[in-house]
Image (cartoon, rainbow, N blue to C red):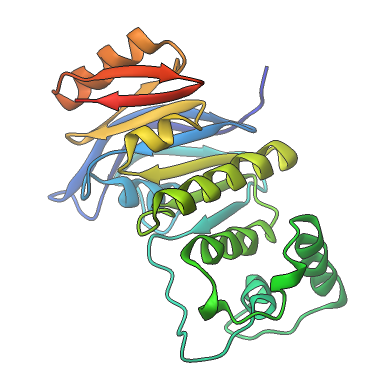
Length: 247
């Protein structure tokens, strides 16, 4: 049985009592699992993630974390001023910023070199970040978050502006590093079909609640549940291990 690393009890998320975004959330997150957080734009996905991270305080309820639980976070909008000629190495080094100051220790430099070597991006080490494709930029930002050695990696719409090729590249990359490092992943997206093909569980965000689907390989159950939650009749076809959704 996998270890429970975070538990949520009767959680209410929002910005004040008059602006409740999500209500009555209760669930657990386990070591090494891949969770897809899926819902329409403005459904509350980012608010939920920021509440789990502690950026926004819960309106009500409890978030119980394992001692020393560490998060990695790639926000929906991560702005790097591309006027400045930052190299990939420099972007990775920002993981060790403290109080807006960067003083790399020998062990920090070693961690950066190790992750560059392990994930085979030596040829990008001194490449300008601004010259990379969208997919490679996201790959670098994910690696930057991994330098914190997280127990839970949270990704907020990391493939939002990517084409299909780069979307699949990023998801395959996340899947592979998760298997290697055994951390949990929460991947937020509005693209249900793409996420469905990579995750262990689905968290469907709709109408102020989260409906959890634990059985993503049970096609009939999955179809019924998604249709019920989103109030639309869908069909799911599986061809060579890839699930296609048709409305």
